[in-house]
Image (cartoon, rainbow, N blue to C red; front, side, top):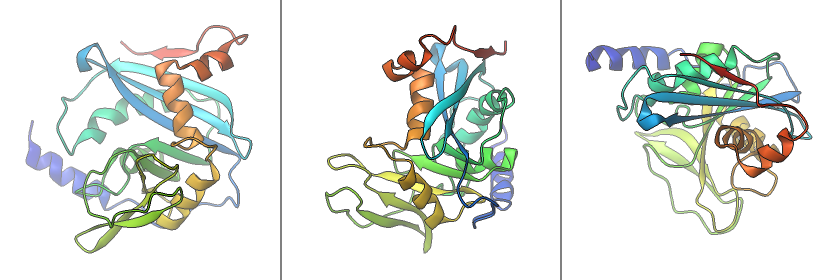
Length: 231
């Protein structure tokens, strides 16, 4: 694999990301959450997308796609490994969300192209990165209370808000994915909190992908799960 060419592609793609608010809605009607995992020792990539009605944040649709993994794990290039399955799940949705949360980084990436930015750019959707761990940059220590925040800085550039969503929990890294400014990204994440560490869109995407109890309860009475598999 030509890493020099891949790095150049990554930098060029990052340059196309829109970092300011570029959406028409005052308040979204549907917000999506997206999550990616791997099965069979990494040979299969699994992507889940959950659609929630806003502001009630009730789950209204979901799709799961499983595809053969197309790229090995290479630190710093995870978006190339994850986006094909996300696109497969996205193509199965019966309705398009106004706003998309992705479990992962947006521009808070060494070359400013985490999976939230990469996927958001590919589907040209207002997108926010909601990451659970720092990938690059530095920030001042946060106080312990919920709501504490600090900017994540890297080479003099603000890349994300480091935000403690819940007391006694590690902070989240909220960043621009595509077509959503940094402050708006934090605002919309805050609007989607319901007492857990994660905002509801990505929490539901994780619940769908992992078949958690909350999703099992929702699924009861609705028939078999609606999976989309690609061999």
